[in-house]
Length: 355
Image (tube, rainbow, N blue to C red):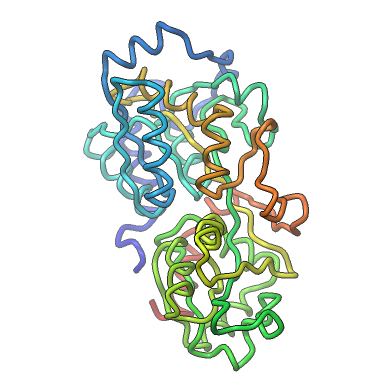
């Protein structure tokens, strides 16, 4: 399940590779550039390149829907989606950069700590789409213009409505420790999923590692991606999920699959997913055009309506049938702390769950 190459080794490789380039590494950054509009000149330059490569941890059907919308808006430019778990995406980019391979144009990660590392090591290019400047909260924008939160989701608890009644369903993380759920729980892995890495940090910080110590005794089915637990409970393979992507649950519910979401009483982990453009992008103009598109009201509303994701764009409207973000008790995302503690979190988790 976990990555074979540790985050520490990837970071070390990135830093070593950065030493070969001027003005790269742990340096001071200039102020964020002026916001950029989509101009006819940018579109023409992007069409000349003809393609853009996007590495992402967004569930593949949603990511491909975004790509198709981009291609429909900008005919003549193809978007290639390379989807994997966020921790695997991070590893892949580290390996490619260490080998002087520049294959990725822009990236989205559900582990916001990755963007901190890529920025610190000089891999990202400053670019601020106009929509980011006008419609996004300051706390979701990098002050140097290297990245911004393109999408958010929650890591929720859930259950199969054919196997569990609302009355007996867990209402909290503590409820998952009831012996009646032994052998009936599925959860994802922080060594693969950025969503679960982020959620594990928040839960261990706010509730304590004793929760995971006890949960590990519940004979939990371990899967990789945060998108997997919702599908496991929908298929009836497990009755309850301890974590998983809210947006996948939304999409399953809206297809009348037998699943229900639980927002734990202790608080629900909030997972921010930033986008960034790479400095050595092979298609730099298409990368910037795609970055502007993904932060646009058009694409953000698509992500919400079709993808089930949460948007920080000030003009986006939430679906009425879904619980509003403002009504949910949230745990706080802290990407800088995750970046510092990731290796410890993975090691401790692996010991507890023996995976």
